[in-house]
Length: 239
Image (cartoon, rainbow, N blue to C red; front, side, top):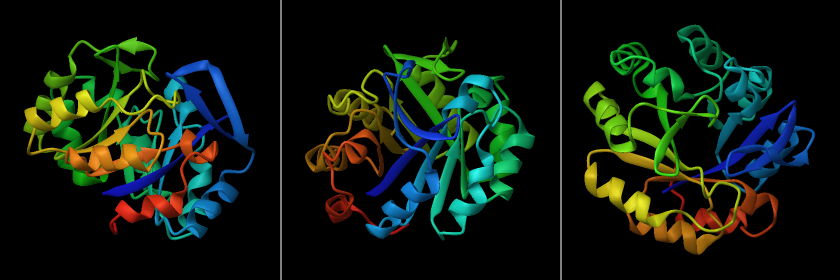
């Protein structure tokens, strides 16, 4: 399993939302680079960066942080506001190893095929699930397709790894939605999943690993001191 510590950005600050609610925002730091360096010092070689402001506006708003973050030799996933091919190309050229894309992939039936043909595995599809429905546009709108229909379309297009966020658990510290991930693993055994939302501690990470989840995103638990990143490396494996 790979552990991805999260840096969520809004107006230049490192923040966390609760259940995807922009009004329920907690600020943790002013400098994302210092946070990334702290994660690196604890032995983690990778970083999950979400541009929350970009997700809401539909354009990348924090891509300028990528060169300094990538200079740390971390493997970076970057998402939020990537609604055009040009914006994906931009963040990949600025230092992101992977681009996390959600709304654009669901724009048309052919879009997953087109993006996979162009970028391949450098795109990580994101499926954000809120009240058992797929949320798009920064979690503010509901997609036409349900979770399993969305994943089936991505699978047919060629994708074999997907980030699934349980938005109802995100930032709550209530624990991951194990039922959701167990259901998806059984329905899509060919697909690897990154789990995000509600992860509190090492026990939660181990529970997800037991379901066959390949990657997890941890955020609030790190910032609140409930999870030690060095301890999490016990279940980590190299990139």
